[in-house]
Length: 193
Image (cartoon, rainbow, N blue to C red; front, side, top):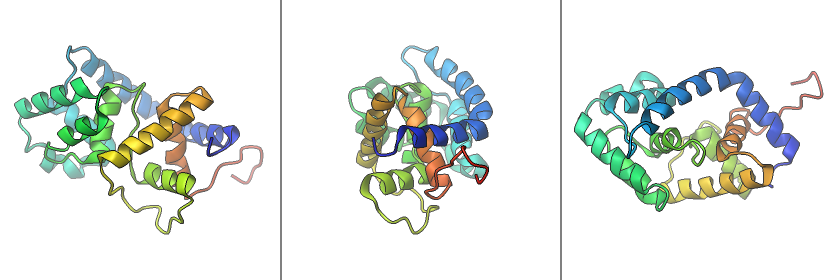
């Protein structure tokens, strides 16, 4: 493990305290809708909801350039091969207007929350700091990587999750808080946090 168990637990606990009520309710609704279809796919509404969850309202103009048919076709194809080829699925999803790798990762996560993680600036920078001991000058710098780098992050989260007895998403939550806290880990045993 790259961080100690207690460090991971403190970070995940802080994430859950801050985000769980919104995160869980929204995830449950959208995931159930996607999984109710065989094969799974997204509608325009679900793509917009996931994008809004990830980015807020700023990306709507780009998302609405996609037709319903294109969204259904691309997401159905991408989600049908996700378990065999994550990079290919990501690359298919980014063909949609307004969908970059962070939103593509969110689509995979909402479709299969037990297997995938969501990448963003905090998760990416925390991953870089923890695994490569890179100095992070700007914790706000965005993820600018590619599908291969997402796959490396996913593998890291899966491996850490296996050691902790968690899901990859739980590890991602801890990384998010580590990045959001600019590399600080909460210590709940003191009143200084």
